Length: 151
Image 1 (cartoon, rainbow, N blue to C red):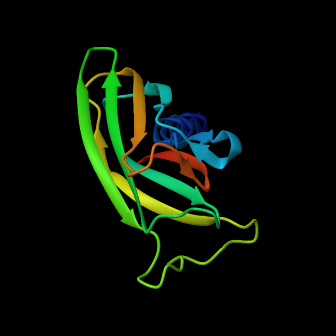
Image 2 (cartoon, rainbow, N blue to C red):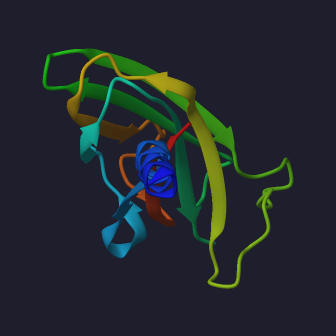
Image 3 (cartoon, rainbow, N blue to C red):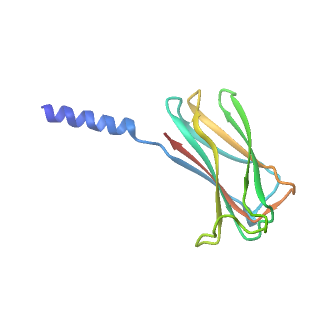
């Protein structure tokens, strides 16, 4: 009897401690980001946990800027809105990519959007991204990937 109770408690503990890490990815048609917004949404964020938010950007050889700048507008069903801007250097002064090319021909860069995000209400959240580059069409960008990691 005691073993059965301990087993049930252990299973409950495992269930409650399971993390819900999520990746939301957008691939760009023709490896070009026009002036349109990229909207990624997730319907299962809760207000009981903190999350690390990381944006991974995949660039290709034809990317022609020294940095990558982006704006994020985050909204939930309750009308709460947050706005942030980010920039990361991707090339050195010589015009060479800072990170090495991976086996599939991409240069990956990570932008820490929030190391400990807390969501004040449970439910659906929208993450709207806009590039803040000097040209209307950003060429050489393959994808952006939002990683939501439960802490």
